[in-house]
Length: 68
Image (cartoon, rainbow, N blue to C red; front, top):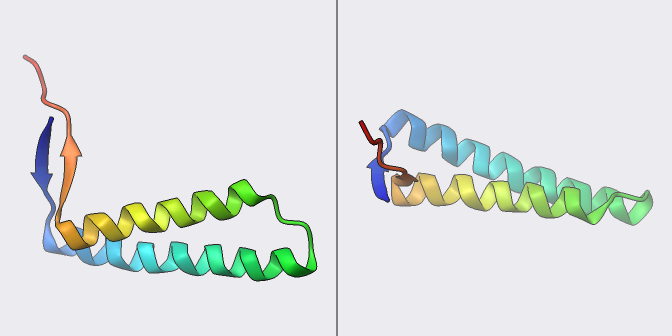
């Protein structure tokens, strides 16, 4: 597996998406206090936020090698 670099614009978009995903997870947690929100939705939003934030901070993502 090779780690491919990410362009600066993609890093900025990933940072915004990561913050937005954490915001959605937080909002779903708050909504879950009042109404019934299934926990997998909250977990998936949090994991997406973590993944986007890691791409934004590290600046690389794992890419498989292409075989010709």
